[in-house]
Picture 1 (tube, rainbow, N blue to C red):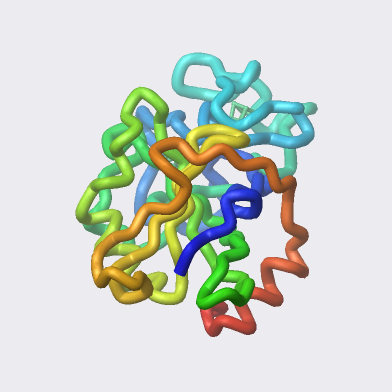
Picture 2 (picture 1 turned 90 degrees about the vertical axis):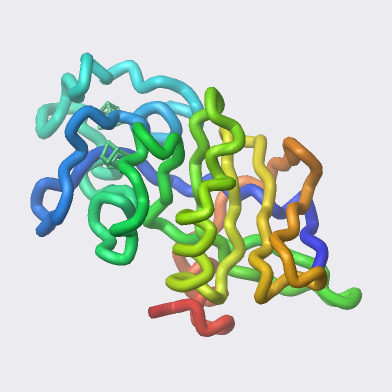
Length: 202
Ligand code: SF4
Ligand code: SF4
């Protein structure tokens, strides 16, 4: 399978902070990584930019005027997903697993197919963080229908195909060392359709 680089990175309209209304097994603690790595559309904050509302280990607009709904609703997978018990907190692992899935358009034997992806936002100071064997094993076990879309910022990404889906039987990387791609965003309806069609919707 080969991925179409032009369609490989799709900026999700996600935002970042802990949703304190949800039952949580973990706490953000000293981590603020999502506030730097993820885009927040209402703030015109691009991926990879530190949010102007960050203050130390907190958010100066938390639950106040100007607090984006996206931030109120969003949590990373480490925080709320019990399947991630073997993973380190994002400020220690240097990656943030997006709670919002997406898809890429790939070319398989000459045919375009839409493949669901789990987006993993990487701290650019640790560009190899996606090589964490626990992360790769987590994807294989818990998201077997998905590729990993490694994101560095709004445009810079690479797509990783796990062994059970690749032609080589090993992890396969698409797009070169730092794939450049600009594909805009996918709607929730488009993403839901791909997840349903591929059996990735749980
Ligand atoms: S990345 Fe996860 S653990 Fe870190 S601040 Fe964001 S929600 Fe909390
Ligand atoms: S508004 Fe607050 S929670 Fe949202 S990204 Fe900025 S600092 Fe983080």
